[in-house]
Amino acid sequence: MRAVIQRVTRATVEVDGERVGTIGPGILVLLGVAHGDTERDAGYLLDRIVGLRIFPDTNGKMNLSLKDTGGALLVVSQFTLLADCTRGRRPSFDAAAPPEVAKSLYNCFVTKARDLGIMVETGVFQAMMEVTLTNQGPVTFVLESRGE
Image 1 (cartoon, helix red, strand yellow):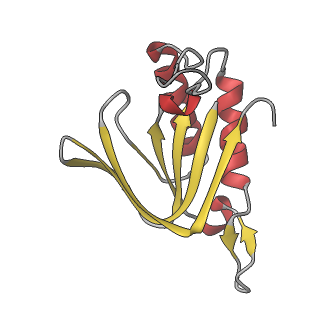
Image 2: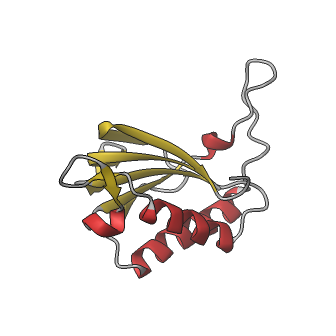
């Protein structure tokens, strides 16, 4: 699994002009599922995301995690994170898991986050979405469940 995470003061996702998810302070997670990913990858990546100390403490130092701040997650599926752009002009998406596998692991990630007591909003799997965010910092990281 690959995730681009952004520390946000707010983020929303819309489908067909209708807001389907919105959060205040927290993390926007753009989540891509690769061939061979498992529930273990989902759990590992979630643990890394919610425990990563990327929020400022009272001294302005990145010392607090999402768990520490009580922030929310907005999780948006994004298979394009698995694109291979090394040859030609058209990206290859061969590394992305098939939709039925990706959806199951995406849902697993969201369920595990909710089981931790985190407020989670989502996009709509396989929908054309419009994501709006205010990135605080800006603070953006790329995480992977394998090869770190």
